Length: 445
Image (cartoon, rainbow, N blue to C red; front, side, top):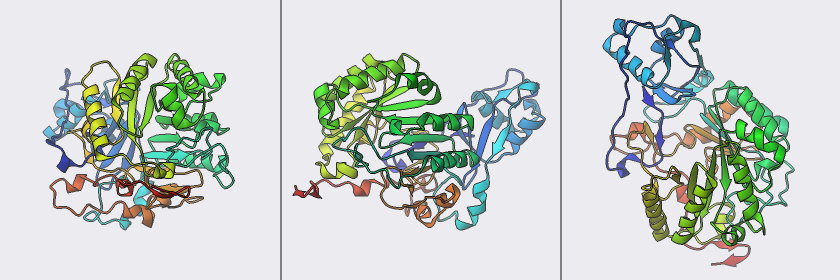
């Protein structure tokens, strides 16, 4: 059994790789142990992905899980391989000695119907149904940020967007096929009239992780308590350490103080808040100010995200390689300060904090992650403009195993020894350019 961790970087770029299988010996090896938690199981192309409140794991087979959830196992009576597996589950907190407290596992194997579409020798690692579903609830927004990758605005025409009923049906379907994480995106998702109703449905249907990405400009007082409980993580956009910087990017006077007020209101209620700062250029003093502000606000994490070459971002000067290097070094240095604040990187090369003990490597788009925009166009990632299809009124598993999605799963043409566990680099990177863009609002740079 291994922790199900995906490292975005490819293994050939990392100095060292090693597998880390944590084991905890039994104090009472003669006792009977049972599965001590509820587990969701989804088949992979090879093996299975398990998820519970303890996290996500990979396992080769279900034999041990089946016995644990029924009659239990005595460690001293197991062979060496099974004992090791039990010690790994014990270390992960998955076992109990109380038969009355035993958990069960639920197998979501509907994706097995499509297995004949794949040649394992030609296909990357993948899940037979998506682990993560990203949904743009609307493309309308109360801001018009200069860099918006969706080209959202207050004047966005919402005619033709998916109806509330379609969104509710998608969420029900996601729960039925074993989706583990749902992310509500936009536009600005808090503008959707049924945001909290959809959040209630997700949690009621047993999906453990529910994420929200918002600009936090307008959050009603009555929303604060339910949002703090329903969403396991709320990512709030804040693009500068001062009103001048943030408001120049979001094009709204007074937005900075409104966001700070709402961040404080949510953190005071125990919400798990992270800040997302899009970096348009390398400015060390501004970034240092962002870290100080994040610490003052009491958020869990701040993520520095490079400008994306999609939407209105396509019309801005691209980040240069020196910018990537400088911001990456800034992140790496910031992580050395033990202040309790996580400093995340959305793609800066030297600041990514490589996970050398990951199970899989490379881009997860279309392998564990599925994205649908507000009009139902489906891709493997919110930053991808290719490999997509009109997914409206099509079952999620039909989308997941469509011709377009299967193109993303072709095994990397490489003779690296890690090719079976590496999906290659980010699929959105080829869209990046280093020169100024042409044909943006009639201007040429």
